[in-house]
Length: 397
Image (cartoon, rainbow, N blue to C red):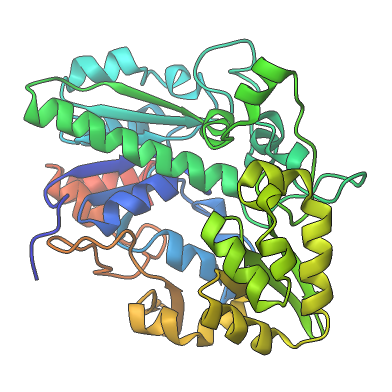
């Protein structure tokens, strides 16, 4: 196998739960050595989130693959000294505490940069490191609301809904990982030094809001919730069949013509007023009604077959059970199994994106709590006596 692209990059992860650890997981999947610092006792709270097998979350197995676990009590000065020792040799530090927490522990950016000028520091937080809301607690749900995403999610006139996943966290984690890669390039390819990446949950989501703000700034338009439809781009919606819903995206000019021909509505497909998207968007209710009248008389499989024949993008709404048995997922290798410390095989998403020359990989399972404490501290220069003293003092576990 070709060398992984981040082999030799040392990452120290101080984060908990989702955003910072997701960024670290992304780097670990492509070869970075990630040492995760966990508090003694229960460790990262994610170990106990959602469904547990023998006391450990199966989510943990996916989130913490390819990482090493070191238990250090950061509330103790000696524990802070241990982290400083590891920082001195690290390429990247990832943290997602509330702003001001590391400063309280004497580990500000200025102090750590003086200790290691090559250090790159990813700081993930709800609202960023500056601004009037910086010190407020911020979770993904609140970031989604502040970014305008929750306002758009749901049916018109009903309460806003969440997507069922912590999108604010993972999207911020991806932004953070991208920032780390750019900072590494600047440092190593252009002779630079370390720097701080300030990734806010709400800004990471705000970055994905497409035309939302431009339309408001020019037209004063406030986009409203639209259910399954895609406002201003038509036709694209979820349509009811005899046995459930199917998604059809007929919003390309040529695609629209083929779609209308396939459902027996050439009168619409050949209408000059519908030849371009602006005309179709103005008559979207008419188009949705025509498509819906056709789908409601058919099963999902029949609709999908017809759309394939017409070369129109369409798909069923997958549950995780559909994902787990789908042949395309399997043939692409998009699902992998990793044997957990408990012995069970945990299915999880593979490493993405797929690089042709230096693909990522899962080399080892998620760690048990403190599994690598002694090994990592020995490699950092502590002898057996020093490690034993730290353990006796409750600094490490």
